Length: 487
Image (cartoon, rainbow, N blue to C red; front, side, top):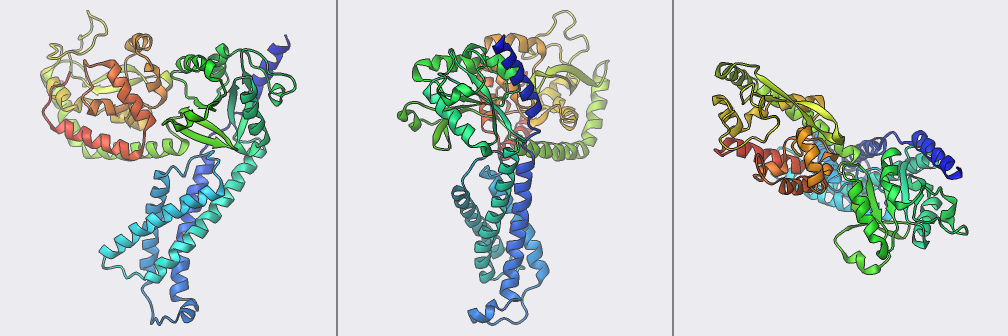
């Protein structure tokens, strides 16, 4: 009875303290970086051409280049440097990075950014630049950006200390290793973690710090607790002899957006290729991560909206032609709607230009499209070969049901089959499904191996970047313009 009451308290706590998202801190970092870069650029111009610094340097200057040129140039510099910071994953929430490491990252990005800016200025002859300004810009940028980072970090940790925007987490394990994890995390509330409790096959010894945390039950109940309480992060502190429990847990959490971090109990495991993250001297192995950060989702969604809206306008004449040909080629509606499974396993109606007869599955029920499928209409053959039947899915992208790039959505009938037959199949639902995907541009579409498709889909999910999306879209365009056999 006492344990049941404790569990109810934990559930209520999880609901009350669920954070509202990690958008605020990355947004503030972007704003502060932009303002810092602008300030550094314009302040360097002022120092060079309008202050008394040139008198001390013994540099003679009559007039100086127009201020407008440097103002417009600063906007270009800010954009380039923000993209460089984003490429180095500097805009994630809960980075828990020390200021010394932050300074090293800032120096690297600013130095690389200076090379890019100087190269651009060299080739763009209409812009009169000063080498002294660029020299000043390097130092002032580092100083101003670091000042902004210090302010944002102070604000972030202040929020966490007040119990706001905390990340719900649990600990798996109950011995001295788990106790060490709990003690360090509990000692540093500025990390932003709300420890709901721990799961272990037996309770922690009463004299340990871990015993003060809520005991949530045996490890076998972890998957259910994670799903029911919106747990976002799991710290795994298991001994080598108990690693079989880890593999069982990961299998049971397929399709659930939760991050696993494991603290090793042997030093040689640190030499593996698994990502290592250190918190207050404790090394954790990141063995499964959230595929898209808050800032990544915003970037991907913005890209989807801009590109899909532009394509809808640019391809409108082609749309009218396809609609006319579909209507003339066979009786029935122009658009074909079908239920598919998207992110988090939620269903939605996916649109396509109809490429088959209206009664294509009237007698057979759901079946895979086959090579030289007799159900296709004359215009449907061309549409499927060129992938133009997928164009209406741009509306799904605008509605937020799909992304331009992602694992292809499947029908509920086949999802129910594959989730029992194909390992990690449900993990593809951790992101939005796409009009095109990494598996498709590598030839895995139609009646091809599901296992191979999953490997490509999971690789895309774990290695997402905006550049990766652009690469896949360009390869999709190239494939659509080539003659190929498609099912």
